[in-house]
Image 1 (tube, rainbow, N blue to C red):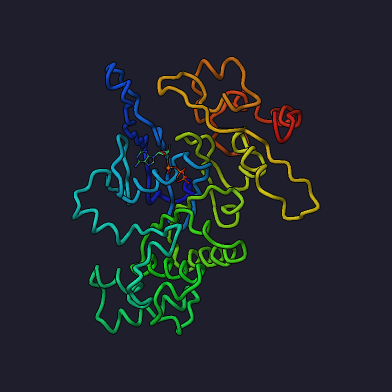
Image 2 (cartoon, helix red, strand yellow):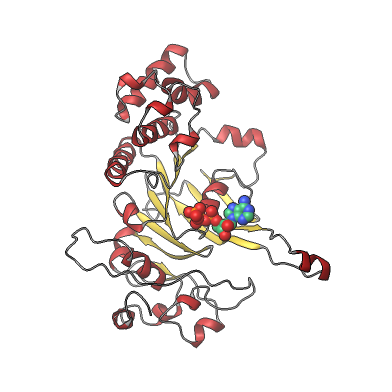
Length: 346
Ligand SMILES: Nc1ncnc2c1ncn2[C@@H]1O[C@H](COP(=O)(O)OP(=O)(O)OP(=O)(O)O)[C@@H](O)[C@H]1O
């Protein structure tokens, strides 16, 4: 989609390092510690009306990337461009003005809603902050937003604790939509909800997007969840994007073994079908200076080259970009090796 439309949001070589706390022994010996690289030189763009999913296991750097896009955390290096404007290091006043265009939906709607405010006041708050319309117009907009997010009017004067998790997430969505943002970052918006409620909220987000053309960055640890609503997906592993492409291509022809393993973890819709998740174990820590592929310690396809050279994010015939020496050399034959692995433990 971003090939046809100018990008609304672009991050380029975005990096976030966190200092590590030195142990007492290290302090005494003066040993230096490498920082933890949470996001490693990530580049991607989002077009108007597009949903880009950011997927990866816990600790892969998804939320840190989302927080930097939202201006909640400064990057160590790299740039963020919004609507053609560099917003990487905006002063606080500039950032505040931008919150109208860039909104967020959090994972846990309960902790993100003020427990002492009524639902109508919560939804109206962004309109008050940005001084949009008269009080009557704001009230009318709240009614419109409750209608749009299928929140029955009887909840208008309720407090968050009186609502179910699904209804609270509808309030979160209505609040994010209130000021007509251009981009919404949704950070695990359904992972705290029951499966049946998840489906309703995903349907709502898809419908809202059809109506408003808002661009969405949808962060999730679950490839199964993003399939339903995303146009493209970026798969993150140990701070890096290891695969990026249209959702159909990534699901039908994954070009990175890590993506293949994540896909294998999605339970089949039909319970009579075999469920054979590929066990890849936990991330293997590597020095920042390590020259090889960061996934090689968990990879059943790894060869010598994987320890010697960093794989580049390179295009594949299927339309994806992937960061893997093996599939770069043989994009269509690696599935044979895939068939040969002992599923559930290598
Ligand atoms: N404020 C922080 N200070 C130090 N380290 C951090 C901080 N925030 C995140 N990290 C580390 O950065 C790495 C990436 O974390 P991040 O939360 O972005 O991952 P994630 O993919 O969103 O995972 P999760 O879904 O579990 O939040 C992890 O190793 C995490 O411990």
